[in-house]
Image (cartoon, rainbow, N blue to C red; front, side):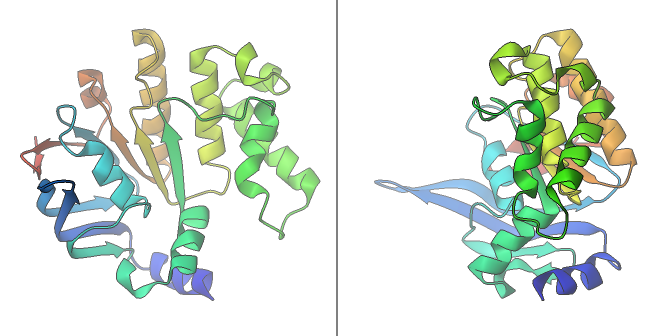
Length: 235
């Protein structure tokens, strides 16, 4: 039902749009985080989101990933206003269409690399356990981890853990890949390798949006945006 609606939409439209989006946080007083944001992200492109700590970068990623809400404006997800969907439908969209990559990897310490990649596929009853395992192994091989499939996170380097996390994010073949500081814990050489991987993924037709403090990302991104005073500005 929801997936049929999305398949029809996504076959015709290739972008995510935030239209006049404003986001506030309330504590003792209202804090404006994002102000009248108008931005479009297309499939097949690699986008960088930059800005100072506390500027709203992670908030923007959370809005795009449908794990946070906004106060004003519209979010058009492949031609559909997200406000039209129920909570269950939004959860389905996240699971089937959005992949997340985090700075701290968020791998399960009790699962090996292959099992970690299989996690997003566990609810998919359309494929067998063997098919899930084969897909996880194919993804890990693609990222040069063929010999590390049975290793647990503590047995992997930071760069290897992040590659496992990227493979996991791709497990359900999402249209949108969101990464929040994916290279923050890596050295310069591994950072360049991860950005290169993400650029290649975008070229294959996915919409890749990455929050980063690193200026190195500018060498790989198709477009670079900076958040200044709550507004998203293209460099």
